[in-house]
Image (cartoon, rainbow, N blue to C red; front, side, top):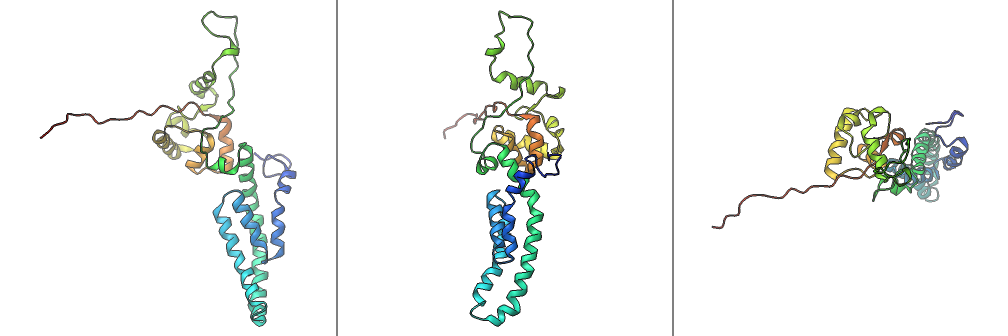
Length: 245
């Protein structure tokens, strides 16, 4: 969610300006504007922007090959292409800037490196809201609040998701997943199928990667979801009678 000061992300305009210095490369016209697209594409793992950087670099390569070998060809074709691709690169950079800042904020907001955010290799510990616990007095059969197992808040969240609590990603029904913002019935059905196949999700980012959700949708889902213990897989063995001939 963007801040009220007109910024694109919740990090504020100062953070966004600091991470927009790469746009200055585009003001070198077509000579070095390709560096800006390679930088942002590699930074947030967006292959399309890397491809655009390679495309813009063709003008630089053409200029280097013709400026000395054939100055007339450079003046005839190289100069117009440099101006055209230079202006196009500036406009292009400002158009992708909002999406780049949102992707970068989502990566840094998850508390992990970009490779761990979009390609999780192991289950990471999630911060989960704990429901308010009120006790009238000590009970001989119920442990005190200080000794409540860590799994208790997750179970409480999964069973009370309909009353405003966070929803357990590994135990929610397909209908409950469809009620989440930005998911819907089609993606909920796909999420349930992927969960049954892989044995559960390790994080909200893993769900977003599998469903192809945009970063701002993942940020909206993060406070609404918790990640409980993955259900144990049960193997299916072959049964029958062995007959020797």
